[in-house]
Amino acid sequence: MADLNERIAVVTGASRGIGRAIALELAGRGATVIINYQKNADTAQAVVAQITGAGGQASAFGADVSQEEGANALIKYTIDTYGKIDILINNAGTTRDNVIMMMGADDFDTVIRTNLRSTWLCSKAAVRAMMRKRYGRIVNVTSISGIMGNAGQTNYSASKAGIIGLTKALAREVAARNITVNAVAPGFVLTDLTSSLPEEITQKLNENIPLGRWGTVEDVAKSTAFLASDEAAYITGHVLVVDGGLAM
Image 1 (tube, rainbow, N blue to C red):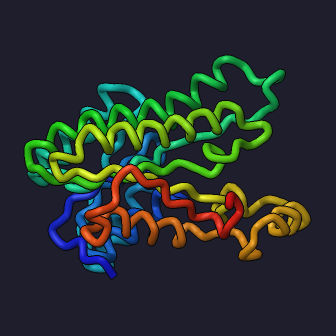
Image 2 (cartoon, rainbow, N blue to C red; image 1 turned 180 degrees about the vertical axis):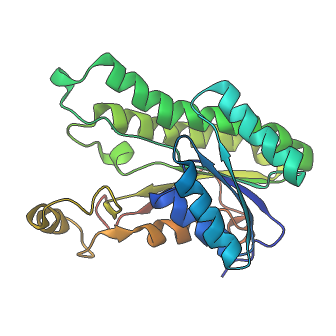
């Protein structure tokens, strides 16, 4: 298991779901983790308590990272408090699904702003500090929807495809400063949001997954931690698909 001792990691949207699992995984490997949240302060503090209760180091910081002032404040807090930022996990995201004929412009703009713009803003703020230190690991959480497309998700698929393009472009920009930029693309993952789906729907979706099961948040977290570690030091501009073979 890759050692992340003395690494300072920021995880956006980390109060629940995949973000929470990533934060716990990084902390379990020795990183100090900043739990970013927008609204759920109590759940964010619960993640901090779980990490510190296990002997790790963590703190929470509320900010809307789809806004420039929020993204800048998060990175400034991290550097002011811990002296540096080594790892940035851009996980903040949302969905507003609908067929295109019924999708409002606000539904499109909100998803692009929350998913794609936040990734760009946080990366921009973090890269300044990483370049000075000549070290950094950025991992962006995209989706197979950004690779395959998904009906009813023109906004979400566009945002996640945009994250893939951003990942590759930024990887080229900062590689000379020993900063890697990669992405992880989950497939169907069991979370609080998907656990309420009727069993017949999950079974039908399973038929399209070669491994025959949905992914877990831990599957995504372990893959993300690998890309954030020095074991992946010679990997950049890569999209690691974690989908049980769905998109192959």
